[in-house]
Length: 394
Image (cartoon, rainbow, N blue to C red; front, side, top):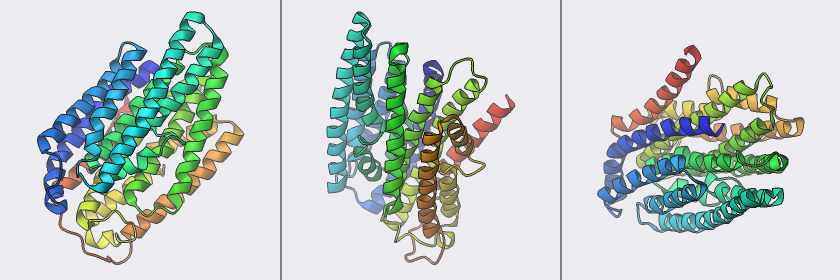
């Protein structure tokens, strides 16, 4: 699974980077006119974006575990200034929170790496389990798993939309890959401990996201908690894959569903963060209570927003419907029951927000946006279904 996930991310990450880089060319000039000129220079923004992409690719291709740790730490350092693009109080606070919490997490991951390397010399199962516990907490922080997720809603909501999309769609996947890479080298005696720990953190993440999404008033934070939810689902999915014997007939189907879930979440969330950024430019607020009547005032964005929310919630024909169905069917009864309850709460919370924003009469008329700003989210959704169709008929 490590190799298949690596190959997927080596294709997916450059695609997401190019989508958001092109979107930035249209987004930043309009954002600067709307929100003021107090921001970091554009040349520095694009330099950091490219360095961020390079650091993620380095993390995916690192030849050793310590090198991978260096690469993941590098992603934190080069992406932090992008969160504070506006140099405002909220964005600066989010940047420092991101740096502090992720630095603590990456320190735990370093300690876990040392324990696992020590375990490889002593062949002690206890050292392996202790090392994986620190790895799961450390890299789980960058993956956005609860209870280590507190940096994520602030960073995703304060960053410019192309940066939010890269953080959610690409960075979280790279951190998840680090956990997968360590899990693959665990001895059989430690497997039960590792898989149980991943399922527990995954369920906690989905539950936490569901609770915080119910009364959410900020549409960008709503998407951020959706990322916490889907990373929780992904880690549960992977744990169930590890627990499933290789000779089980549906093992290959589960493995494909896991990869499709990762790719689908990344592309749909990229589209949603782009739309959310456009709504922020048009209404100059992230408050759900202010954005109403998009079907009247911004019909194109209204359909894209509603479609994106339905897709990320797993409504057919979303690929996430089939992957989540596969996950629930493969899980044990207690885990499946918990997932169904939390997924229903998430669906209700997100649809309440989406319908509130798209239906009714506008409370405020939005500023007119360039048509080019709607191209990237439409392209991301189209790319997703094109890839699924090609895979089905391959």
